[in-house]
Image (cartoon, rainbow, N blue to C red):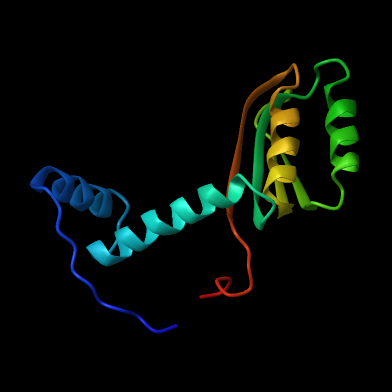
Length: 139
């Protein structure tokens, strides 16, 4: 993909914030930091529609909570077309950590994660998504 150059004018405070962002995230330069911010905005807009995205649902939960595992499995079966893989880890004898790799329409992944995260016994959950269209995968 060809790279185009352009100039940007920013207030000193905004430029300082961009430099902080680049440094904190180990970007080699401002261009990479801006590229990441723009990509993040594009993905955020895709979440609001039916575009295909990929990501992960991360869950930390009490696996001995009554019926929680049955509800998690039932939701995974309901969204089987969007689920690519599930990894299950144990933090302690009772606290589990799941990483559910997903791909599909953004609204479906958001529905699935919202349902999983809201289950009683889930201590923490988060959905992370990125664009998955063929033009941008693997670059």
